[in-house]
Length: 83
Image (cartoon, rainbow, N blue to C red; front, top):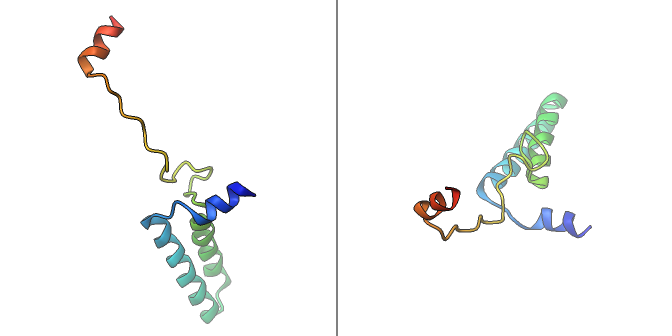
């Protein structure tokens, strides 16, 4: 349950906000026009925004929230270690 809470409340970035706004806007539009097919499209945007997944699923299109560690060795030192 803690992971679900963290997924919903934290790590909001601009792409995630845009997906949520688009999904809600399309959902309102589909209700006004009584078009259920467009409503399904809106659910795709809302669900991907809330779960922070992309179209590929399983966090493969999501922006990682862990920064990669900086490598302190220079390229020359790495080449020397290989040889």
